[in-house]
Each structure stands twice: as structure tokens, then as C-alpha cells.
Amino acid sequence: MTTAHGATSAPDDVYDPDVRRLVEAIRARGVGSLRDTGVEAARRSLESIVRPAGPDMRSVQSRELPRPHGTVPVRIYRPRSTPDRHAPALVWFHGGGMIMGTLDSFDRLAREVAESTRAVVINVDYRLAPEHRYPVAHDEAWAALRWAHDNAHDLGLDPDRIGVGGDSAGGGLAAATALRARNEGGPRIAQQVLVYPGLERRCDRPSMRRFGDSPFLRSEDIDWMKSLYLGDDPAEDDEYGTPVLATDLSGLPPAVVICGYADPLRDGVEDYGRRLQEAGVPTAVIRYPGVGHGFFMQTHALARARAAMAEVGALVAARFAPIT
Image (tube, rainbow, N blue to C red; front, side, top):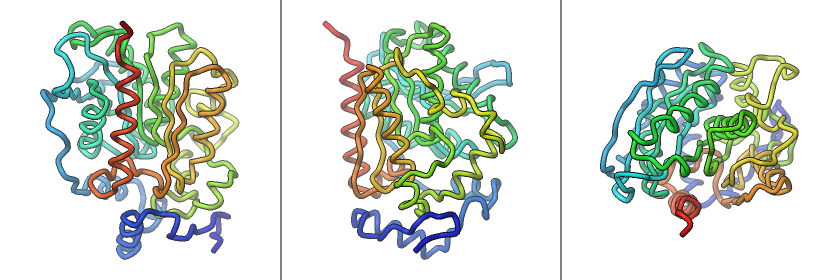
């Protein structure tokens, strides 16, 4: 079936059995597009999802960073596996299409990333569109990275082992932060972890045509959310709002780039990973079959998500390991 936006409904047999059950539950609830739902209702819906508690941490601290657009809340997760001093860290940006998501709705994911990577996770509660359009979120992501470096000693972090990462929209923020750090000569980023990152406006790619009516992410919602954050005119985009526009990817930090087979963003994500490789950046591009967009948030329900969390975490931890 072809939708009004040119996307086709993918057959359910592309999904793992546990993902199919999730798809059936979404359809049974009659969940519509985010655009039809509206910003406020979409935010309430995300915050209302009840998820099992994440892994226990040695400590969880809340801070507020004073920055040009106002204070930025962050939540710092220190897993039991990290040392008190000179620990590796990921400055993490949550997903939500740049219009929704909070430290609370992404608490479980932050805990799991910290546990699996054996790194301190600094989860950043950047401001959301449409109230705060580009470049506010990007500026706050950049400020959080600089703060982590400036305060590494007090936070018990190794300044040479601070990376950036994020899922979906947050992955796009992480990619843009890496670009800016390279362009401005620092601070140093040890690695970038891009989990099905939002790197571009909707493009006519095979994965977008096949999976653009996915119950997890619709092409029409990509258009809507990108416009709310970036504005309606693509001609005004730059590489910090739309990282695929960067013409030179050389000199960027090593990358882990992951996506699901049935994600409409898949081809754009993998193309960016290949461009990183071609530019000489050590990059692992990992595709997980049987899952769609957002699967990293579903470890409590999806076996493939649990495997991905363990595998990606181990790779990130290995890259953080000090060279002796």
C-alpha cells in the first residue's frame, strides 16, 4: 500500500516476532501521526509511558549549567563499574524529534547506556522546539560538552576520554557537536555514538519509501518535526542543524553508527557512516535486522534491543579503554 506521502507500508514479516507484537499493540490503540496528535499531546504521551526501572547506579546527580539561553539541566549517571577518578564519559542527547523528551522519559535509556558502556553518562535536557528553534538545542549541546571538559577534574572524568552520543534527534545533535568541535579546534571528543541519528530532512531514499509509514516513525512526521526545529526553508539549513550538509568529514572522532533494518532513516544514516569511513574516520556501521526506529528504547520488550545495547556498549567501552 502506498500512502499519500509516497511511502509504502512494509509487511510485518520484516519485524522480529516480539516487534510484531509491539506493532499490533500500537495499531490496536489507533495511534495516529504525531502531526495530527500535536506537540503538547505528543509530549504527554511520551511522558506517560511506564518503563521498568533501569540499572542501579553508584550515583545519579542533577546539575544546572548556566548558559546563554538560560540554565540547562543535566543528570549525571555513574555506574558501579566506573572508577571515582579519571572515568570515561558520554555527553548524551536524548531523542524525541527535537520537540519532546525529558530527563525522566529517557532515564532508563541513560542508565542502560551508562551500564553497558561502563562510562559516566551526562544526559542533557536541551530546550525543545517549537518554543526554542535552531540553533538553541545545538548551542546547549555544545555548551554541555564544553562544561564536561571544563569540569572534568571535579566530575572525576578523564578529559581525554569524553565522547558524545545520542539517539534519533539526539544523535543528530551529537554529530553536529562533533563537527563544531573539529571546526573550532576543540574540545577533544574521544568518540561519537550515533544511534539511528536524525541527520537530514526527509530524503527520497529506498528505506524512506519502504518504511515511511512505519508505526514507529512516519515520513510526514519527519517533515513536521524538522520544520518545527529548523524552519520551513531547507535553503537556510547549515551543517550544525543538518549534519549531512557537511562537505568535509575528515578529522572527526571515531564513530559508532547504528540503525534498524526497518527504519525509514536507515539509508541516510548508513550513507553518513560510509562517508565517515571514506574520510578516514574509524567508523563501525551496524545494522540490526528485525527492528525499526526507536528500538534502543525497548530493551525491556525486545530481544534484539537487548543484544544491541550489550554489543554497542562493549564496542564503546573498548574504544574508551586506555592504551597501555
